[in-house]
Image 1 (tube, rainbow, N blue to C red):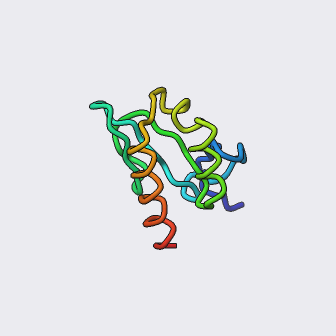
Image 2 (cartoon, one colour):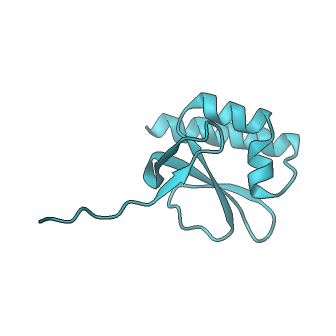
Length: 93
């Protein structure tokens, strides 16, 4: 009998669907307080996962779900920066 390899699952904060970790984009609050997109999934800091769909990103930013998950207050310029990083990540797909 062949055993399948375990794949970690995470919940999207936008749509609340459970998906494989590699199907989601990780956003991290760094120990210095900055917010970055973590394509490797290994950056140090508090992380939150969002689907690779534009709808989930818009929902998580507009409703404050991302800020709540990262336990910080996002400024308007950080939200604009995250939206531009989102577009860059989505263009890679």
